Image (spheres, helix red, strand yellow):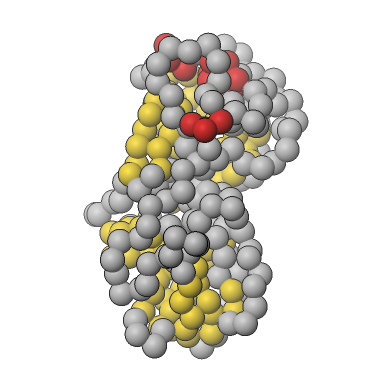
Amino acid sequence: MKSLAIWSLAALSVLGACSQPPAPAATANKPPAAPPASTAAAPSQSGPQTVTGTVVETMDAANYTYVRVKTNTAEVWAATGQFKVAVGDRVTVPLEMPMQDFHSMALKRDFPLIYFTSHIDREGQSTAAMMPGHEQAAPGMMSGHPAMGGAPPAQGEATKVAPAAGGMTIADLWTKRAGLAGKNVTVRGRVVKFNGGILDRNWIHIQDGTGTAKDGSNDLTITSQDMVKVGDIITATGKVVLNKDFGAGYSYGLMVEGATIVAK
């Protein structure tokens, strides 16, 4: 099975001992690098280029709609948040977030090149429907799949969620992260983003009402094999990882990996 290590959904990078949350410049999602050369045109510097063509294959999986689009010169695979589309429809696809040699667990299928894009529009329309877990402002997210991962979700202040017994708040985890690298921690919060089946794992953002959105210390990215949904209050136990780099400009200053999750 080929897997692609280019995904991240919350880009926040600081490793050294520090009692303060990460600076804004380090916590915001980094935009993905330009797509590699392929049969589809690469995005221009002014924004992602688009292609328009006819849908020749489509399927839904893990909250995404996948489409194979035939243009005048090539065929392009793309995926975005689920939407209604049928073979024969004409659509326009922004060439955001290219992923090479991507394996979909949900579909049990390999894609030599696929674009995880923020929206796919019918020809002549501009719905700009948001892809789950991705920020509209950044090309591709996992603002997020990830946007695997991404900048702290623009969810507003989360409802206060009390920490688990013996657990930590998200703000405390950010503050003490340098001394927690490689250790197991328990944290409790409300799911504000979920992206399933990317790089053989599920990607989850939680918030508990602590920390601040300005510097990203209000948000935590977790990977797990467990399934959750947006709005769930969960308790997650997993290993603290710092400065995890998935390539293509996607990196996490702090995340909790391989978590076991108990929903409220």
